[in-house]
Image (cartoon, rainbow, N blue to C red; front, side, top):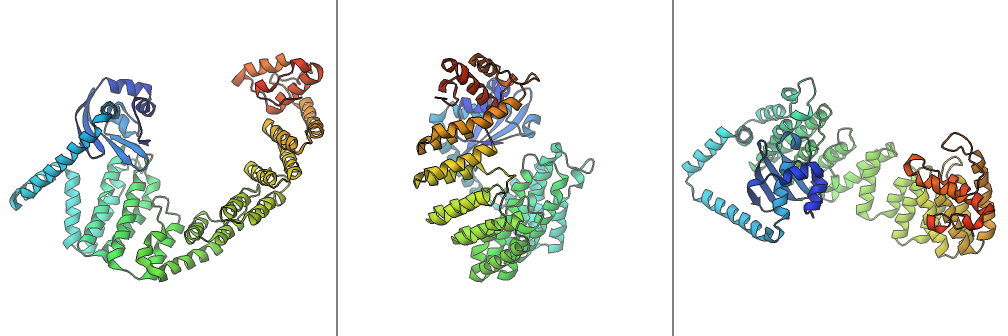
Length: 497
């Protein structure tokens, strides 16, 4: 669970919710241990649980707890407790971090001073007590000296969902244990690379990525652990490619094929991450493969993403625009994206033309993208094309007679000095709408022009939320008969005068 790092008591209360926060205030962590920007503590409530807060995650504050509630991904009271120790002692944070670094140095010095036999005894002791550590070391040992076939078998066992799938599916309660086991595959690939077997590491990490991707549909991964594991495997693959220096064409093909496959929902592999491995020839191959795939499927999400990515890195505005131009949205929103890109590149005339095309090419039955209309009106206003802006606001108002559209039409017409004439035309369809709209009580709106009617309707809020057009109609009727009593700008509605 990750949130913004800048937090105090209010932030913790927002993360945990009032109930968990209040319960967290009633307990206190025993010997909270600072490790740089991490706090680990045993927290005693009804039972003792291990809670850890990481303060330097990419998404901000992250916490884990082995309590049942914490394993569900919730920010439980056991995470509130160490969070409070940090929140209530902000001035002591530098000192606590300094002590953490000192402890790390002291531990390293103590381990360095141990003899070989003492270190072996310590490792054996830990292996005997920690099964996960034992499996990691077993796989590393096989990775360094064993046959690749043996390592591959061990990898497949680690990624096998069978032992965790009670009913053919790994449920949430078992997903954490599966993820902890699957994570050992990363260390196996890293061990092969470290042992000078980078070519084997490439093969193993690719297979592991494929196996994990195939298994994801059979796992409840609500917390997103699998994505982190597969991203780590992708990094291990890249780390293995650097010393192995594999064939550039083949290395270019693998990340492109993987990105374009249906299985790449986890890793976020970017072929350009391999630029230092590929060299100029390999990068050119990536571009050619991407272009070929895009020509076959110009509307595919992965194909478009890859082409956009390559164009952006190369600073190729025209290439980026070509990708979008091949799959234009009917409401003009894609035209707007291209227009903004051209505008940012210092090509305002081309940008304006693209935006205008977005309006011209939209089918009659499709409502134009509001942001496109706003962009064009801003451009027209800046160029003193005020009547063009009014005409465009009329297009918007005709398609969607809302309060906002009415106000924007009024603003544009006032700027052009023609609001009085435009106002009378705008009220014609609004009056027609008012005659056809039914009230929330099932009958037609009363012709009573009293502003009290509108105010009573507003006062009911969520119970009877009047439509914008109903508000406009009521206000207009009130203005026609009782101008002094008609709702004015204080209600946030158009001033009819």
